[in-house]
Amino acid sequence: MKTYLGNEKQRYFDSLIALMRSGDITDEQEAELIALRRELQRNKQERSNHLASIRTMIAELGVSIEELFVAEAIVAAAQKLGGGAVGSRTATGRSTEKNVRASDANEVLLLLPKEAGVKGPPVWKYRRGRVFERGSGTTPRPWPMKLRQFPTKLLMLGHSVDSLRPFFTPEGAAYFATEQGQVELTKLVDIVNEARQALMVD
Image 1: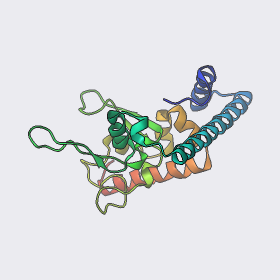
Image 2 (image 1 turned 90 degrees about the horizontal axis):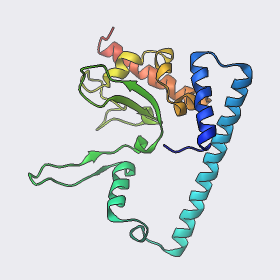
Image 3 (image 1 turned 180 degrees about the vertical axis):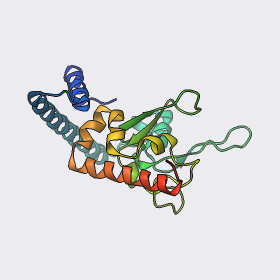
Image 4 (image 1 turned 180 degrees about the horizontal axis):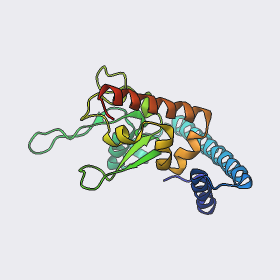
């Protein structure tokens, strides 16, 4: 996970986020949290500016991606960031292609735990921006409105902002405190409640 504050400040930032989520934060600590969040955003922007300068230099020098990275790294990056399907075929001819979303490269804002005995990954992750993406085909939402295909943990726990708050990551807590983050979180909850009503989930 990237850190834009350095290890020591990041640990303190995480502790302040935890205090905010538990409701035990003082006014002084809240001011420190705001200052650290501003520093994080500033450092993040500076990093972005440096990357832009590097890209410009690479373009001006005519350096190819093959000169910078080995083939395996290029394929891995394409699978993560390509926004499409990248893969190969196994010896049996079965495709290993994987659908890749643009938001796959974004930070994780929510981590929902898996219930004991339930198959699948240990947690369900929500990445920034996913709620604004279209689903597969013509589905105008990130998840099909079908019980088996809509994320079960989100369906159970995402009916309100308060029900999701305990599962914010530190990045999520900071982002959802912003105006843009509140818009995204509200949209996420609206989609969940739409699905709960359509699928008749109590």
